[in-house]
Length: 253
Image (cartoon, rainbow, N blue to C red; front, side, top):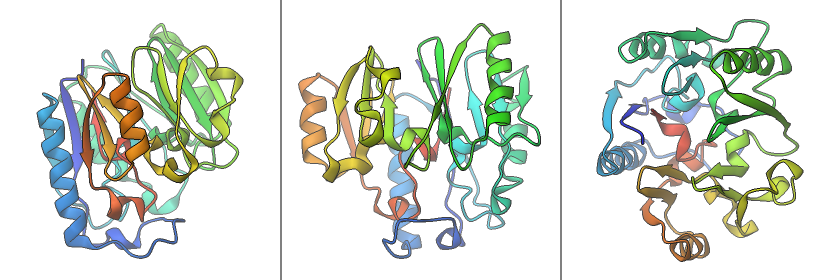
């Protein structure tokens, strides 16, 4: 059960963040509204939410998931390879000290972003991407081993982050799309395959008794309801324009 979440409001420079979507520039006021609804949803999921002020130095800073890996007993602050994001994790590390006695960190030459990390019960999957390199993954694997967790690296072919194309919903159920539909590492789980037309919704988010999904993905919603999940739909259009998904907007622990 998650008890806490950390989020950060989008800053006025949000539109200048990193994006490959070709969906146009985000509307800032609409992004603020969508973010506020996201926070309301986390509260509905019985989380205590720490909402940080916007930080205009970092256009991508609303995507706080990339700054840390948070578990019950420890947290690991990440290390960005992308220059425009270097430094985002500093304030997050300070806030995490309120919750954790133990803080680890990824250091140069290792790079690692939280969007590449997926925990499935007592095992971690680490995506090797343009944002997370072998050295960063190996540092994290050593840290995880000290805390009793096993881990596996997953080289990515097309997606930005691991959790762009796969999400763990609990109860041995994975949402998968694209390159992960027939991936040997995940055949042992119950897979819900996301249609190609709804691939953005693969980044859905299990929070306690609910599953948060982007609004407008009818087929995925139907599949989740068939599994008896309690679904909350959220407008995510402005974050999709900036390559962001539901998990990206919070740290949950």
